[in-house]
Amino acid sequence: NTEEPWKPFNRSRVYMADLESTLHYSLRSELAAYPSIRGAALNALKKYISVLKKYFPGRPMVMNLLWSADSWLQKQTGDAVSYEAFREILDNSEQLPDTALPEGLTWVGCQGSQPHFRRYPCGVWTLFHVLTVQAMNSSDPQEVLSAMRDYIGIFFGCRPCAEHFKTMAEESMAEVITTKMAVLWLWTIHNRVNNRLAGALSEDPNFPKIEWPSPELCSACHTVKENGDHKWNQEEVLPFFVSYYSKNTILTDYLE
Ligand code: FAD
Image (cartoon, rainbow, N blue to C red; front, side):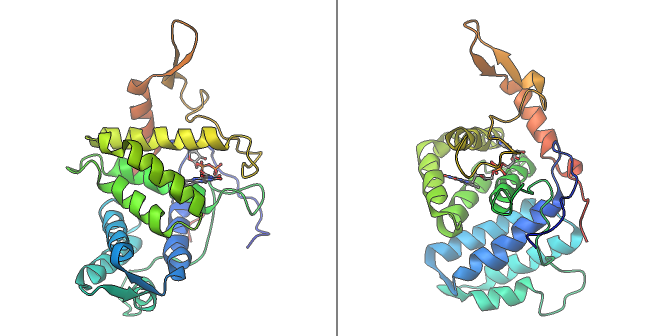
């Protein structure tokens, strides 16, 4: 899998292959580290799957699987579930028609120039940006962000990343009182992480960490203050962001 040929892709688009690969890795690898999922971890998993069921802009087959996983989890009223039992649902052991989460990893927009670059963490950011945009008509502005905070906080394999993210959420997530603010909050937090990681060893030289979107992607998003400093034009960032991460602009290339 590490020797796969490079797949040509459009750097200004989002790919469903990355989103499905992220779900596969999250639900079949990351979660598998927890043979028994209980207490706060079980609540976090329930919230994560519930948000995916509501907002993941997936193919019908994947949505059917998320519905099935959500309804199974909602029925689990005990303190713990075994990963093995959850995995049977994920693998659709009941053989429900047109219900599946495809196996395997096909990174496209999240390909790295080396196997240790990008991939799953890139997919996680992409997934949650897509979900905040899909949830813009929701009545609960914190729904997606709190599901992300709890999933990352408990399950994300990169523990220092999870700790940083939880700290940032504690500092400012409570200020999010509209779904537009939720979209922009995650945008701001992601840029803060990009700034912190610029030049670090984890940076793929072919994908330098910059404040996103670059002027090439959205020139109207950038303005200058009177003193010459850079300033974001949030009025432009939001519509650009919504279109970039919206369901109908996601490309389905490389899906099986
Ligand atoms: P990523 O930062 O993963 O971004 C993926 C894509 O999202 C980019 O290619 C771009 O198209 C788009 N994008 C970039 N910025 C924004 C933005 N502001 N808003 C919307 N879209 C944007 N790594 C560490 O070494 N230390 C950490 O503390 C750390 N914390 C993390 C916390 C979380 C919650 C996550 C999900 C990841 C974290 N990582 C951390 C990993 C790191 O942020 C990158 O995901 C990883 O280095 C891969 O980088 P990338 O080049 O693929 O771009």
